[in-house]
Image (cartoon, rainbow, N blue to C red):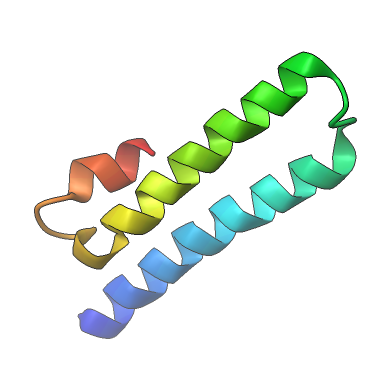
Length: 66
């Protein structure tokens, strides 16, 4: 059970990283709205990373929302 939950957690974090890096190379980051949006997304990914150690416990909702 621990291996499956760890794999699911790593898959979710990899998907977030992959989508963020793809978006960063696809769009023009010099536009004002895009830069702010990327900063907001970066903050959400940081919150998800902080909630990851307890993603199947107390911080499950925080991890799922971010």
